[in-house]
Amino acid sequence: MKKAIALGLMMVFASLAISADLPKDVDTVDYSLDAPSRLAIDGELTEASPTWHRWRPASYEELGLNCDLVMSSDYTTEPYFDMYCFNVTDSEPVEFVVDSADFDTVIYLYCDPFDPMAPTENAIYMDDDDGVGLLSAIFADNGVTLTPGNDYWFVICSYSSTSGAFSVTTSENVSLCGTVGSESIDMGTLKSYFR
Picture 1 (cartoon, rainbow, N blue to C red):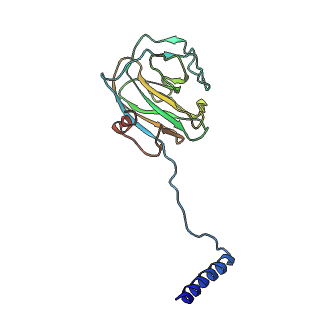
Picture 2: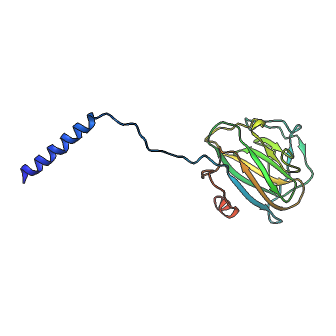
Picture 3: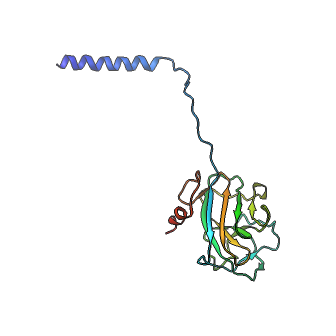
């Protein structure tokens, strides 16, 4: 029995030594990786949504990449809003495009922490009507580049105190905090991340 075990072990070691010296063939297996996809955020502002006292910069083209966008103009309305924590996977410019909405939209990007009671602090960028019609959009050519590993906030609100459904698409390098931004998400799932 001992001889059989010893002989078996010698055969295993010999085959390993021989296979280690064989030339490696080119890998001919085809791989396909799904391309990253854009994150879709679908939500709704209702009369039960929170409101805030929003501000805007002196110029819509201003950018505060160091969380220092000066919000100098006070709006008199207190519209409904919704907010989403997000991260970036690289330092390429981000995009947030309101594809559809039942109301005139305004969007903001903030550094963490975002406090709706202090809307002039930690602001990065704001857009009112760069999308289609009265819809908002932040495009790559706006130059909003963020740091991977940091938390940021996307805020969407109505221009005035109106409500309705909205749909937003982001660039491929955006994911919600604690998630991977590779698939569409419904509002119920999204809100479960913040409970």
